[in-house]
Length: 305
Image (spheres, rainbow, N blue to C red):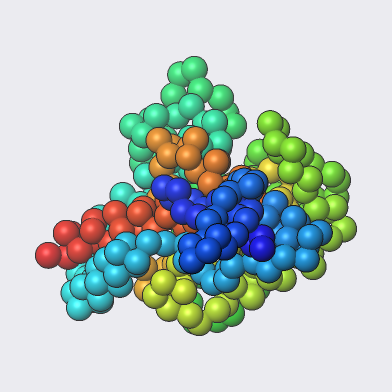
């Protein structure tokens, strides 16, 4: 008898085709084949009419889930935070998020230079006009994001298009706030992206998730899904990564979590996690985001106390 077994390795899962044989009173099991992703295992199972193990969401380790719940409850007990504390935290997030999100995409401004561009209006020698605009545009996008987060109204397609328009403002005006009308490719990836005509329909799932009312860990899973869906759909010619991270934060902030930063230092693991999610394994991506959410919660609690 053969079946597919789900196995954990570090922050991710893999799958094995296992043969089980009974010899006398004992049962021997032997792994016959290895599947690195859920999609590979499902394709094999479908072809050979085999069952798959339960695929319920177990994207974040239980100890981390427990810690996230505890820290969010702690932060909620300290709310409302004073206006002065909130303003300091808002400014830190604005600078750090702009720096790290742009740096992940290849922007060469340092953290200090990003602060100078945003707070002093200084032009940094040796850095392009585009790199300066990426910083100022991202800050404006964060300002709009915060308005959406504080609002009780439903997030619409227009809201997301307006957010994207700010990301590419003065950089690529013809594509700012408009879905792509051409085929695009991710350099270094074999992933085939959806056809441009499919984008508006596929994005409906993102808008539904943005307006989900789930709280706690379910809200984190929702934010992970939003992030991956935007990256996978690639709805725009450019700015998809920055938008994915902003929308992830919009979902988290509306569920009561503090804004969260995916850091430049995590870039390699982050891209690897996105590739795993393309194959149906969201654990690595969720663990990266979950750990960064905990850092954000700790920062807010420390500031409040």
